[in-house]
Image 1 (tube, rainbow, N blue to C red):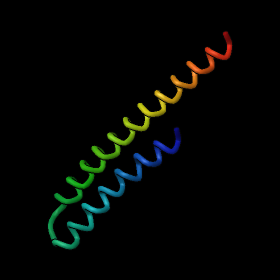
Image 2 (image 1 turned 60 degrees about the vertical axis):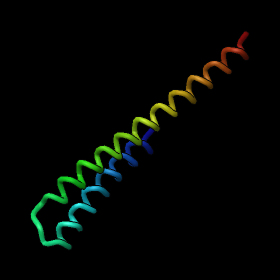
Image 3 (image 1 turned 135 degrees about the vertical axis):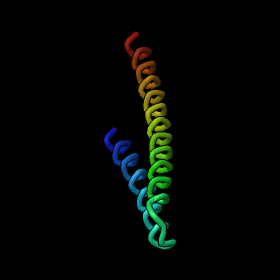
Image 4 (image 1 turned 90 degrees about the horizontal axis):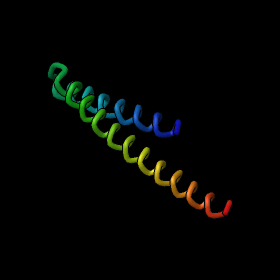
Length: 71
């Protein structure tokens, strides 16, 4: 579970960093940083939700198999 949090935060940071580097390369204001940060948040939240759904399915499957062994 901690791995999902680290992955999400690193994706947000990577998006913001890429936006910052784009701004630095183009000599613009902060529009690339803003767009990169927003894209990083979208990617991070998407992967967080996918990972949480996958973990939920794994926990449900483990719970069902545990119920069969108890019977």
